[in-house]
Amino acid sequence: MTADWSPLAAPSLDDLAALAETAFAALPAEIRKAAGEVVFRVDDFPDDEMLEALGIEDAFELTGLYQGVDRIHRSVFDPAPEASRVFLFRRPILDEWAERGDVTLGELISHILVHEIGHHFGLSDDDIHALEDQAD
Image 1: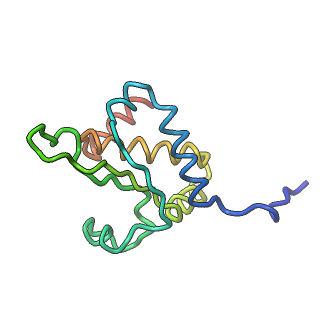
Image 2: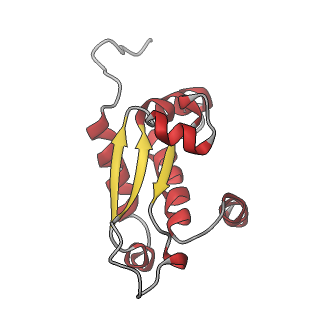
């Protein structure tokens, strides 16, 4: 028997935002509290300025981005910083999800979200990968 996919549509920006909110709510309370005020935004793709700043040519290579002053580099003497933002990029996420085929969309979004929140805490990509390896 074949599944009928004809009535299904690709997850929307709002669908991914809901998955991100669910993933954030599932984090331990101490992590959510330590993250402080973080705004989540879902766009189809990163804008050209983001790609240029990161030296990325292919927009499909960037699934998420942390933007803001990480908690390690904030000072009480600095003016009140803007809320930190975590961007999730729908089309690259859906592309990775389809290519992998070994995780649910919720699991992938959770992974990306945790990775970007790691940057909020001042962790490098290498630090985050080492923590992920320890957790596996």
